[in-house]
Length: 186
Length: 199
Figure (tube, each protein chain N blue to C red):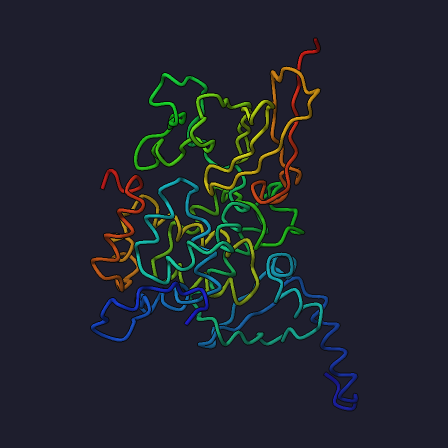
């Protein structure tokens, strides 16, 4: 970079160079760098899309202080896999809000992607997806967690997620009696 | 504490301050989040027993799972509600005010006693014309005239309307939501269509 250029000009040059790249570099909370397709990042993350459009992506690695390296690696892996997969018609329409969108089954590769994650990695990825505004990844990871609850008794759910039972015995019995039909095969 | 935290009887002695469901550290920030927990719970299967089972996990979960806001989102998310069973018009089957037959196995089998005929003592003279999108349409006598009754068996909500004097003999009827299935059909307005044979 030429030293006699004004600061504004130099900044402008850097931004143009950044805009020309096909990838963006993201830095995890523990300082690790990851490259991800700019197109996929902008398409899948509202936060990254805003940063790219606003020119606040740092060539030397955009700091994502809230996301650890393992979660960020999974985010980048998901973006790259997504970039390489043929999106189904259901996934292309992103105009439907996450909060009101009806359920869409995860694609086969998405299912495999979350199935290989450990318990901790899955929850870290939910947080990362939430932070980055990645609706589809949040959808897929939350779906996986709900699947971990499926078919389990309340005791088993508490055990899997290490949740404290704060009901009294009497309260539990009262609810069970009120909805006795739902506990018929317990 | 969330505003949605349900209230419990003050007479129940608490051995310690009301604990918040405290998951292990890895999942705590997700399951402790009032934004993320309902997003996860919303994805439970739309089977009748799903929410009752999950609501026994802890008070906070029950607070979410029983809130009208959550239930509206749950229905909108899953769109197609499961078929619980059917209503029939045979008063000799199962008792005259029990006209519901469950179509699923336990623990999702909702008992017929929860869906008693909503027409009072005179239920033998009422018959089902239609049932869809969570509402049932019944036809029965009101004094010398006939009337239709729209019933939501899940909430017990009833709306009655007398038929016009020239309605004739009603053979078929339908209750239709007015939202075009884009919203929560059961919360939307509805239309009733009856057809009768002339003469």
